[in-house]
Length: 372
Ligand code: HEM
Image (cartoon, rainbow, N blue to C red):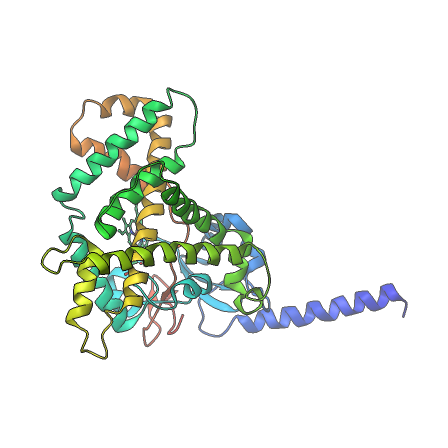
């Protein structure tokens, strides 16, 4: 056989092996889904940045519950309001756990509130919700901070004197200050270089997370771990933010007055003191650090992106802008809710881990199997 013939034969054998493998991937009793290749899984079908549109197309073909493989990790996608509600609300107790997310797992180490599971998650979530509320989140007492931030924001916007500019950074500065008041008990000047550095790390980190290298890390963590690339920068940035917050925790420990807790960190430190004789306690310095990091991260990017989208929608609908200047509060909620409804703010939620014990049928669709 000549060289061309041998190459073609080799390619044909590889293709057959891949097809056999892909068929093996369609295990009995699994939800329907596209073919899956070794190592890459369904990646070739999930065209890079436009994963959401690809999942939408797949849902048209396979229904609202289907399986794709992110690398070698089988993942059940829930793609409709009804099935998401059924899983996360009606059967919420069976879907409490987090699934694996290699890049975030590496940064969070199973600590904190977002990526933890079991008793740790339960305790930290309960404490976080209660303490955020105590310091005014969702209450009138926090309105003062929001008003103050809104005024600073308007001042910065006016200083642009109608020139075009990108509002992303300004919205991050305002959003992070509101959450920072609750967590750290302070707000930062919009031009403070240290604050700007932290916000840069936050925004850039989020971008790197969803970059090609970031996605590849989540598919092939064991290989990517040893390779240089933007994913390594992502971890460096996350650790720099954590070092900044660790310094804030140290400052709080030095200046803590038990009778006068100032913010979330102080309350956590007091809880740590209360629990210091409990060997099983989840109120440790490591969990404090990671919970503050989680809340700072989760609260900043999401809120500033939402503000950006609202601005975009208002720019596209000047007639609504005009009405907002005269209308009362319920009317102000309408464009906000419409924006959240219309835009895809968070493309894919954090993975959940089903702990259900058997298969169930919903609308002729299989429910996620145990461990998926
Ligand atoms: C418009 C703003 C926001 C959006 C769109 C948003 C979106 C989300 C989404 C999609 C999740 C994943 C839910 C799940 O896995 O079931 C989540 C979780 C979370 N968010 Fe937000 N979020 C926003 C604001 C905030 C704020 C202001 C904070 C904190 C101050 C926050 C803290 C968290 C935390 C701690 C979790 C993890 C909850 C858990 O695992 O128990 N979020 N968020």
